[in-house]
Figure 1 (cartoon, each protein chain N blue to C red):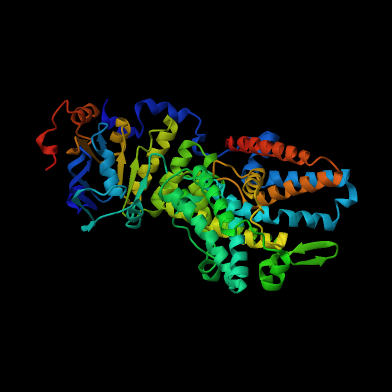
Figure 2 (cartoon, one colour; figure 1 turned 180 degrees about the horizontal axis):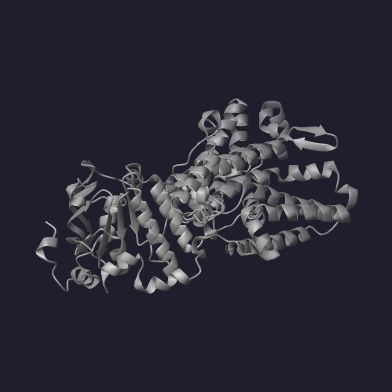
Amino acid sequence: MTQAQEPILTARGLVKRYGRVTALDNADFDLYPGEILAVIGDNGAGKSSLIKAISGAVTPDEGEIRLDGKPIAFKSPMEAREAGIETVYQNLALSPALSIADNMFLGREIRKPGFMGQWLRMLDRPAMEKRARDKLTELGLMTIQNISQAVETLSGGQRQGVAVARAAAFGSKMVIMDEPTAALGVKESRRVLELILDVKKRGLPIVLISHNMPHVFEVADRIHIHRLGRRLAVIDPKQYTMSDAVAFMTGAKAPPEAALAA
Amino acid sequence: MSVETTKASGAQEFEKTLAASDTSVASFDTHSRTPLESIQHRLHKSPAMVPLIILLLSVILFAIVVGGRFFSPFTLTLILQQVAITGMVGIAQTLVVLTAGIDLSVGAIMVLSSVVMGQFAMHYGVPAPVAVAVGLLVGALCGFINGILIARVKLPPFIVTLGTWSIYAAVNFIYSGNETIRSQDLETNAPLLQFFGNSFKVGGAVFTYGVLLMLVMAAIAWYVLNHTAWGRHVYAVGDDPEAAELSGVRVDRMLLAVYTLTGIICAIAGWALIGRIGSVSPQAGQFENINSITAVVIGGTSLFGGRGSILGTIFGALIVGVFALGLRLWGTDPQWTQLSVGALIIVAVGIDQWIRKISA
């Protein structure tokens, strides 16, 4: 299985303290190529801190993160993005008044070649709109008629689609998705799940943070269970039930030795 | 529940019925709109439309009631001259308001810069271009101080600029000793300071260099806001600063740049102000902060940030100019100007709220 391969990203012994609270207590993490890894855990288990440490939003106090075997230390989400790690935040991080194309390229705009771009810093709108349209088409989202439409005129699922397309367009190593279905209705959730599988098909590994067990069990290849600031176990969703996972994550049941993290 | 069956079907048990349901979830907006909705959408796309329509209507209105005296090239270009300063400061104010901020100190920065230019040229005997440069630097510094307090110390823009408005105005009076530099003295010693008061005629129309300067500044600001990454980031920061930050925009650096740039634009307006009134007076331009905010709001820029345009602000300034001159030529009490401007502000904000409630 995937385990035979080298992991894309590993974290060992991450520690993050906020005053007297220890959010991460020697946490480990592994992501393998081409997989969907779900991260589940109770509130306060340290999921967010773990994800933030990987996406560059917080710097861990101790521990080591390696991307493709090379140690990394991100000081901001920008640096993580430049390294190829894209994050779809729960609040999506889109600017409602800007167009779909402007949003997809926010912070990494394409400029016109030659004098106009170099000296007058003119944006290459046609190029950006074309790439945005291609990306949305690839992900089957091209029912969006007008790429210069403001994001605020889109529905929740469509916005999620734009955010996912942005991550898929620029993520060269991995995509992190934080609660992508939390704010969506049944139909829109289904669409987003299909989108996640599409991104996976294109070879990008995905870290999926979710509280929604049916969604996690449907799409995940492996499930990382986080408890009390550390990785408790990694389970295969085909061998355990949702109630097992919930029991492990809340401490009602101890996971079997085989699944325990080293 | 068996995991295997759900895997095989590709959907959760409770989602089985979805296949039979309407599949239009990810498709976009094809339902027909009522005429009112189409107007709302059009306005949402080009927010400068409303002030443009109001501007045209008010010109037509005054052309009818006042007649040829109003609708002449001379009068119409006179309006341009009268709104040039407000237009320039309004451009600066637009940048700030787009970031969801406000700058109450713009008028004070403008006057202080003009006073510094005058004092340096007349009393320190430095060449006029150097005096102008020092004035621009003072403007930049004032804006930079606002920016540091807002972006780094994270104080609310309203409070910061309320404070610096008093401070810059007081510095202006203390430094100048409330002394006015006479027009004749400037003319003989530093005519460069009055440069933007020079004018040329095209038929009956009279254009000052100050008017041209405003138009050029508006064109540059329009280009930067719409066609550069920096300009899009101004909107993004005003729209949702957290989202902008996560998308890779350095929000505090952006705010610092916007307030500093505002200071520089105000200093340029201060230079043009000397040309407009001929002399250097610490008393001049007292109300430019309110005038510029009025132009911005009537111009359809949202005080909540992220929405609006430079064009709208110029139209907003022109609308006020048209009402002021039109009502005066009509022979009414000047208070009617105040009253109608007040009403326009409220109407503009009402329209902004309506446009924001747009739905796909």
